[in-house]
Image (tube, rainbow, N blue to C red):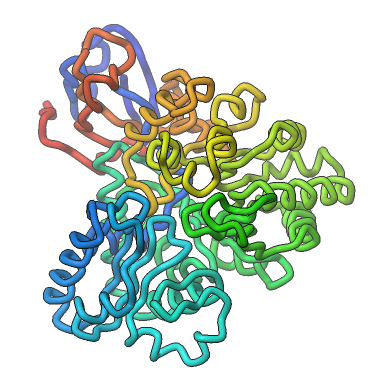
Length: 494
C-alpha cells in the first residue's frame, strides 16, 4: 500500500514497486491492515474524566465501591469528586450507595457518582445543598439517589465544576485512548442536558488543531428551543444524538408500554411528545441537518415512529430519506419499527456491549423487563437483515471504548438469532460509522480513499480475519489521513 498526501494511492502485491520513491517504508511483518474503527456514540469529556479518575465499573460489590470512593476522596484533598460506572445489579448487596454512606466515605465532600447508564446518580449532601429546590424536582430521593429532573440538575452542577483546562485534558485523554484501540473517528453526542455548548465547541476546536481521531459533533436540543441554530453555530452536523425521548432501562426511566418487572407502579419517563418529535424532524429536514433522538423503551419508540411518520407526511418521504436521520440505542424495536426505519432510511446507532453486559440470563434486562421482553432487546441481526444502516458505538463512558469487544459482543449476542457475522459486525464499526454521519467515500481500503486505518497483530496471521476466540488483536499503529496517531513501537520505519 502506498499513501500519498493522506490518501491511499496504490494497493498491490509487489512490495518493492514504490520502495525507492517512498519517503518512509513500514514493514508490517504479516500484520492485519484494516479500516480504522469509528465509534458512533461517545461523550469525550465524561470518558476522559472517568479514565483519569474514579471508575466504579470495576467495583464488584458495594463495599468495594465505597472503598474506591474513599480512596479517591483522600486523593482529591477535599475537592469535587466525580465518579462513574456503578451498577447495583452486579453487586451482591443489590442496591446503590446512599448519600449517608457517600458523606461518610468522603468526609462531607461535594460528590457526584453517575450510574453506569448515566441516567441516575448518587450525590452527596454537600452537592444537594448547592441545589436549592432540588427536593421538589421529579426523581429526587432523600437517600441521595437522583433520577429524572433531579438528576439533570445534579449533573449540570457537577459538570459546571469542570474548568476549561480540565475539560481539554479529559478530551485529549479520550482521543489518545481511542487511538490506542484503532479508532480513527469519534461521534460526540453533546447537548444542553448531557454536556454544554462550550464543551462541544472546545472539543471540535481541539480535534481540528491536534492530531488524533477525527471528531464529528452532534447537538441534542429541540428545534423549538433553538437547537437547529445552535447546532449550526457550534459546527455540529446534526441536531441529533442524545436528544432524550426517555431514559434508560437500568435506571427505570426508559419509557415502556407496560410496567417494569421489578417496579410494577412504574412505566418509565417520557420527556418528549410525538408532536415535539414531528416538529423537530420537519425543521431539521428543511434545514438540511440530520435529526435524531435517544430512544430506548418500546413506548418511546412508538412515539418517535409516530413523529417520523407525521413528519414524512409534511415534508415528503423523499426529503426524509435524503436527510438520513438516525436513532441512538434503539434497544426495543418491534417488527413494525424496523420496517418503518427502512422505509425512511433512518439509521440505527447501537451499542453491542449493552447486550454483552445486560442481556445474559438473569442479567439486568431480565431483572427489569422479564424474560419475554429481555429476549427481544438489541435486535442487531433483524435490523441488519432489513437493510437498515447499522453503526456501532460505545456510548463511552457507559461501556468501554474498545471496538473489538463490541465486535465480539455482536457476533456472540446472547440471543443466537441476533448474532451478526464477523464481516457485518466489522462493517458496522467501520464503514457504516462513516455513512451514518453522511460520509459515503470513507472507511474502505481502496485507492483514492483517505488513509484512515489501523494495523493489528493477530494470533492467527494466516487467516484473512482475526479469530476473536483467541483474544483480541493488538493495535500496532493507527493512522488518520496517513499520519500516525498511535504507535506501539513494534513496527520499525525504514
